Image 1 (cartoon, rainbow, N blue to C red):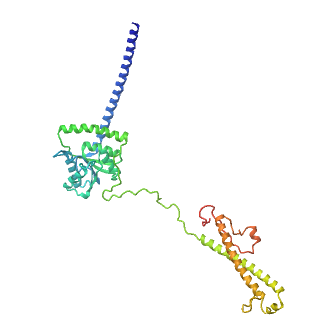
Image 2: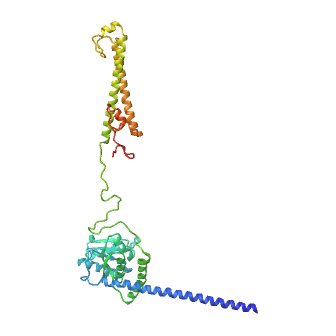
Image 3: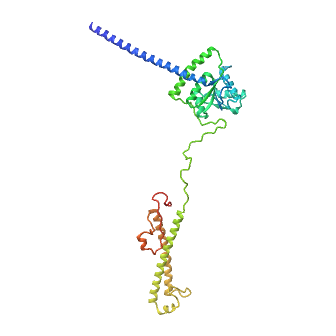
Length: 390
């Protein structure tokens, strides 16, 4: 008996908790429904406010260079024309002939090969007397949002006239305003009776709610973008590039650094060759004096008519002086070759190793050897091209 009473009490507690939970759920659901209704009313009112920017008269509507013709199916049923399509075509043709627009952008759905709204709109417009050169087709206008946003992103329109029925124009103008497009709407005739009116308004109710969600919350874009398309003589945008618009630095000019270095190298080689020639001449003179002192009387008598260091090539080359001259010439040639090779090696080491082969004219070492002909070398940048000087 006691267990039964305890069980009944637990059941009452559970029922009470469940009732409170169900009441909380119903309360939350009621709040959500209320918020949805408020949101729907605000969305409908916000979009409906754009009716003040739509026109029913061709004479009253402002001029815009391009009219955006929103697409729909040309046939309501097999063999039955769609009155909405026919009315939009006539409205676009009337605006063109009244010079309220210069071009017509026909935007519609073409997701299937058997369904091509832009092509059908172009055929119908040409029958109304609109030249084909004044009709531009947008095959990716799957939804009204796609048609309006692509008019801005692809066809580079900042202002336009939207051509459709009134309820449709209001929604399109709402999207255009959110996308930064200055647009006006031209209302085509709305066909059909009361039943068609109710069906269209029922569909439009949910379309407007979705439109507000796409614009304000989801930031929905078109299904397809593409490269910019020019309408008429509109210039295409310049492609982006990393190249600076203005030149940021002066062009590098060819300097005479290499020529100056070549002249310095040539002067150094000539200086080394001159030193080698003087050394060879001194060696030759010393050898000549030594041979003259130790030579025979016959050789000395035969050479009395010749100045020191000069050999008569017409006489016998076995004489002491002529032999010395021949040796000195060989030594001189060898010394000159050695001097040139040494100068070239020093120049290469100076460039590759950083060792300077030139003497600073203001240094103490140069003051001690001031009688020598040396060419000072200019400073070289520690990095970069070795031919560039400060």
